[in-house]
Length: 281
Image 1 (cartoon, one colour):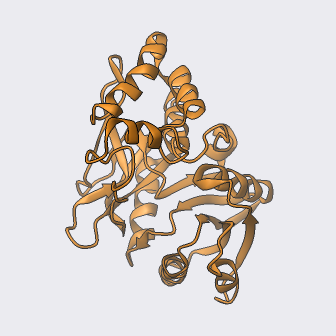
Image 2: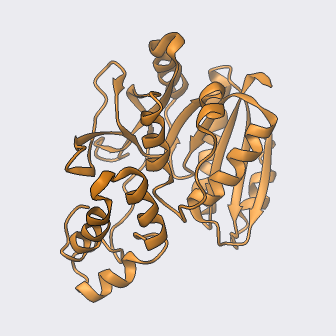
């Protein structure tokens, strides 16, 4: 195992400028924090030259190319498995539209130290670059028995906080936990893989800790044209919800069956009804 190194896992598709900016910023932050790292970049069929541009950055980077059918979760599954076969001390998930702040690794490592010998998955809090409001990070279940998929996003509080669910924007996973939890489940076609990973962790008694402060900046994904766009008709939202970036039925069925308890069929149907009605799942 590469005991003093971190594998950075990034998936990308056709947003060259953002991906390259993310990679450059990562290198600056990691070098300043004396983090030895290797980047595994999965380029899922980009046609804008992202892969070639990444190779010319003079970084320790391995670029893997997909055919455009992998999307986020399956791209991350591929490179997570590849990195785990080599063995690293830590694995850092990083979205290519997330810009780390200079003290990102300080906050990530501080949360790891806060967990102590117990170890934990460290979830990085991320905010909007303009408003400063939290956009992604850790969430806490609101009503796990009645509404198992309803959770509230937490803002950092100055000390690490326990959370129940995580977004995959910035996540640091120790090697021992990666061995125990294994990989992301490729059943999930695009999203939901990070939710499933965090819920599987909680079932095994693995702690999830949100960083004490923001570790990066990333705006919320726009809702225009998606199943969350309330300006669309019910028919249009229904069409979008079954797309890979919506709530595809195989992924949603797996999520509900695995984490929805005895009432999982009700939660499965309820998810689609609420989206059509323009409400949260």
